[in-house]
Length: 385
Image (cartoon, rainbow, N blue to C red):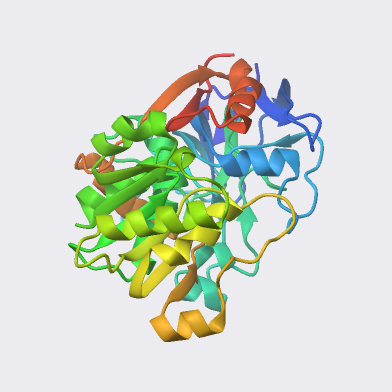
C-alpha cells in the first residue's frame, strides 16, 4: 500500500481503491472495479467517501435517458451525493488546515459533502448571480467528472460543503442534491407562508424532502400527489392533503377531476394553490400542474422527464396571461443553499428517509428505481462491498 503526501504529513491513503462504474451505458448495469487513488492538485482536497446517495439523475445518466446530454462514456464513475472526510490537501494547502470560503477552516478528517455541481469557475455571470449549475465551465459529479460512487475522490477545496456535527453522514448524503434542489425550487416558487404548495411525486426521493422543507421549514401548506401506498408516509412528513394518482384516469376527464379536487382542498372557494413543485419526471404531471394553480401561481420545474422533450400541455399564452401564471425552471442550488439545507437538517426540520445498501447492490437499487418501487432515498455505504 502506497502513501499519499499530504502537505508534509505522510498519512495512510491507499494507492488504489474501489469504485462503482457504469460498465454498459444505456443499460442498467454497474460493476465494482479497483482504480488508482488520485492525488489532489493545488486548491483541491482528497475526500475519503463513506456514503453516497442514489439519485434518479444517476439513473438517467447511466441509461442515457436525457436526450439533451451527450452519451455517457463506459467506465464512468457515477454518483453526486457524496459525504466523507478530508484525507489530503493539494500542494500549498497550508499544512493540515485550509481556509474555506464560508469562513471556516477545513482540516484533515473534517466531514464534507460533494454535490451534483462538482466545480464552477466562480467568475462568469451565472456564478456571480448564484446560479452555479449554469456556470459556463461547470463540472458535474458523476458525468464526465469522476463521481462519488467510489471510496476516494478529488474535489475543489472551495466547493465542498462542511457537514454539521449533528447530521449523520448517511442522512446528509441525499440532502446534497435532493435537499438542495427542492429548497432552491421552493424559494423560486413565490409562495408565501400559509399558502398551499402542491408536490407531485411527494413520496419519492425529491418529493419527500420537499414536503418537509415546505411545511416545516418555510411555513407552506402542502398537498401531496403520489401512489396510494405512500399516503401515510407523505402525511407523516407534513402534507395536509393527499391524492392517489392511480385513482384518476389518464385521459382529460381524469386530469380535470384531479384538478378540481386539488383546488377544492385549498379552500377559499377552490381558487387553487400558490405553486406546484413538480418532483417527478412525468410529462403527465407537468401537463396537469397548471390546472392546480390559483391566479398568479407558479409551476416550478424540478423533475426532468426522460426521452424526447415534450412541451408542457396546456401552457398556451392566453391561459398564462389571463391568470398571470409563471413557469419557472430550477436547476439544483448553490453553495449557500447547500449550507442552509444542512442547517435545517441539523435543527431537525428535514430528515432523509432512506435505506442503506452496500456497493454491490447499486444495480439492484437502479432496477427498483426503474420499477418505481423506492420510497424516500437509498444511500450506498462505500465501506461495504
